[in-house]
Amino acid sequence: MRLLIATDAWRPQINGVVRSLEYMAAEAPRFGAEVVFLTPERFRSLPMPTYPEIRLSLVGPGALAEILDEVRPTHVHIATEGPIGLATRLACLRQMRAFTTSYHTRFPEYVAARTGIPDTWSYAALRRFHRAARAMMVSTPSLERELTARGFRNIMRWTRGVDTVLFRPRGERILDAAAPVFLYVGRVAVEKNLDAFLSLDLPGTKVIVGDGPSRAELERRYPEARFLGSLTGEDLARVYASSDVFVFPSLTDTFGIVLIEALASGLPIAAFPVTGPLDVIGPSGCGVLKDDLREAALAALDVPRDRCRAYGETFTWQESARQFFSNIEKAHSGG
Image (tube, rainbow, N blue to C red; front, top):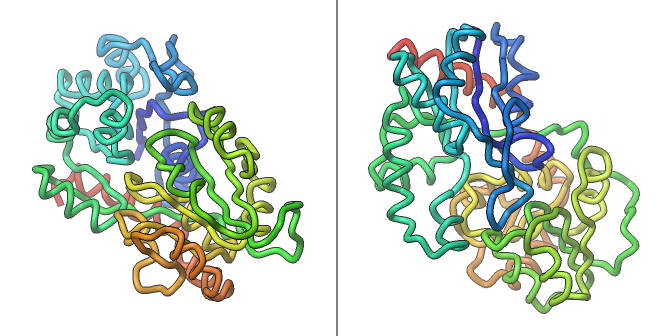
């Protein structure tokens, strides 16, 4: 398999899409596959309105057709619905080339939160985008059910994994902060619903890791919270291990890789009972999911950390890659 993955999400962005694709490439040789990425690094780009950290590539199907002829992939996977994804889709359709897609992000809800455009309009556009694919991959059972109800078809499951060597419990606490430490990791943007966390009356310290367009405003409104900016690798792993509860206020995430990073680090989860947390936590007893996020955060303090670590270890990138490459082969073979 020589797989071309077309993605608008790429470094220096720090998010679950980028991390998932990087791990798929790292695991590819184990499954007899070679991965070639088509990313914004290859094209001129402009900053996305209201979110300049994301670049929008200037690319058309003509350029993509040339790239497809140059790379000569046996399979094509379109990871995002942005300019690169759209151009790759059109080029594949013109060449009568089969492709698969994945649904990573609740784009309609994000657009509605930022612009007021009804999410029904965006879902209609996404149905059209993914309908032409041999299969569309989603991360959780509840997301599959939801999208099926919205008219999406040919859905396959693709779970996610975690680096359990990097993300692990540690004996030291590097944060100079009053305990208990309630941690959030992710984009600092309106769609992440951070007000629901930062406005809670909780003991100890609230810590935010990540960056985004809402950071300056939230820092001004919540001066008692600690904003550490974007962290990766060992720096991020040490902050996880220095915290007591991972609070996930998002109502729109499709999975939340940060959830299993926290679990692998020994952190219990406090979240709303929505897609993502419901699927990841399930009946594990490693988190508290309530409509009252304050109650969930306080109750999560009583969850044993060793239980969280043991459950986090069940999510592996090898299994994630096995599903991913198997889905692509099945979709192209019609199996």
